[in-house]
Length: 352
Ligand SMILES: Nc1ncnc2c1ncn2[C@@H]1O[C@H](COP(=O)(O)OS(=O)(=O)O)[C@@H](OP(=O)(O)O)[C@H]1O
Image (cartoon, rainbow, N blue to C red):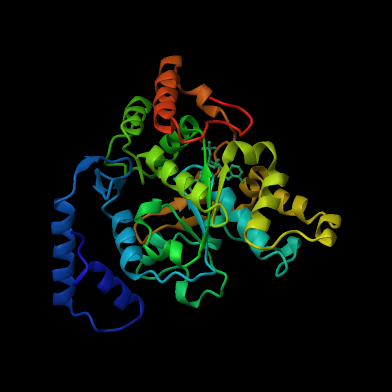
């Protein structure tokens, strides 16, 4: 059973709110309960930490993701107007964050002095699980005005139960797992502490195929959101990275409509869709000073160089890394996992 009574979350929440209600003794007890709980969970080799642990069917880092998920499950207060960007890591989160931030706030900012020119997308839209486990979060979720734009890597079934009854809207983005693997391998090796040997592509491949990576198994993550999107298409918009690359303007219009802010005739005439796409394009964002030299503080311990969120931004880069055999095995796993779901790999008019 997950710790809930005297738990780290009580400590973090109290500390964040500057309440002195949790004594050092209670904190230590909470920490002990948390550590004892972690010991009861299955372990596997980690990508950025020594180990990842399995909680409710998904592999998470014990240092941040598990704490964050527990915090969200116990303490996050959803609002019916919340918009969630839900993603498995390396599927297009950064792009989606930028597009949605620019779309939902388009009447507030001028394109020549837009916040995305000075701030990385990850500093404009916060991950709820990461935000809640920081001592000093970037954003106070309670103070954000509605509709709140939030992000989560949390699997659908691990979100608080109120997600459906509360009426929040969710946007999910899926990407070819071969590209996800290659992207994850590059990124995680950048984050991997020096004291741990870098992961070889072969090791990363095996872990990924076994379903062991952050918030994985990847296919379970995807299928939960996919099935939920079929059940509630008005509440969950399911996108593919490949489709967005192929027809970005079509999908940006879908996004705007989905969140109840369709582009007006006047906006279309003024080229607002193209302006947002240009602002959020891989080339534009990658070349901004903030994304070349700035950093994103994920947690108090994990700081990412913004440039690491922008690698190639292409579809099919896996071809430069995976052998035929690796490709075939990974495609086979995907085919088996997605069988009978109606979900296919690649852009929507093309099958596996
Ligand atoms: N604006 C834009 N347009 C298109 N593609 C983009 C964009 N920004 C980032 N990227 C590419 O997305 C990959 C990173 O995925 P995520 O953003 O989901 O990473 S993270 O989970 O937030 O760490 C990673 O893909 P790879 O290049 O294949 O590694 C990024 O380069």
